[in-house]
Picture 1: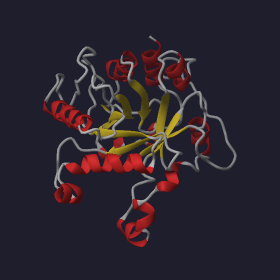
Picture 2: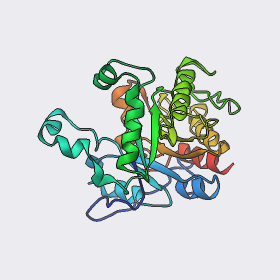
Picture 3: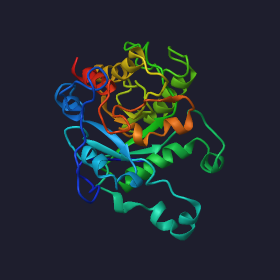
Picture 4: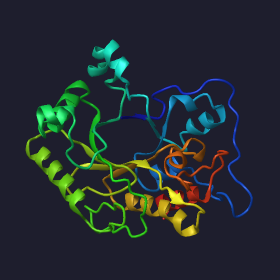
Length: 297
């Protein structure tokens, strides 16, 4: 996975229409803030961003919002770099030597998505060394890009974020530093001791990991909730963003698409949804106000 600064790619074609940004009183956003603007100006972050995917770029109303630099300062292609077997077979050189991306990408998630060592081809052949080898190869291929490792914790409850515990990761019903956080902390320490290039640590919808001098980014924020929505559940978006604001080395927040129209949550988790700050009609929700307040307060 990789992260592009806004303006680094051209998105969308056709006639652009503009979506309404409010709904009936009490049911939608009342904020006049713009999320990337307040992230940069009020919280001193590099960006507020969103994931997107190729199939969504024909939706001109959606693209008009996505291209608004006041709302989004960074874009993550969600599935565009995930290759199927026949593609690897047909053009392996293009995929394993992707130097044509060098200089165009802000950050790479080099090692991604699991919270423990697991049996797969690289680990089975190379052992734990595959992490350092991957980071070293990535630095050689794209020297100017930030290199991240990223942990999956499947977190969706943030009511008790402890901002004084820099190593806390809240997994299901876990609100204290635990085995997963400690294990990943030790991995990062070992990489640093071996002089392996690592610039940051990304987490899917969660914080915080900065005492080692590396950056932290919230790279896949969507806080799914069991329906119907309540004000307490909506407040969790604000808690996560406020936690990022409170930590200087948290460089930015990326939501995993900005609208419920294209959210992966309802089709994956029955009875859950409302994970994004825009609704399925591309109208801002109260969650939008919570994110803005998290950056501003």
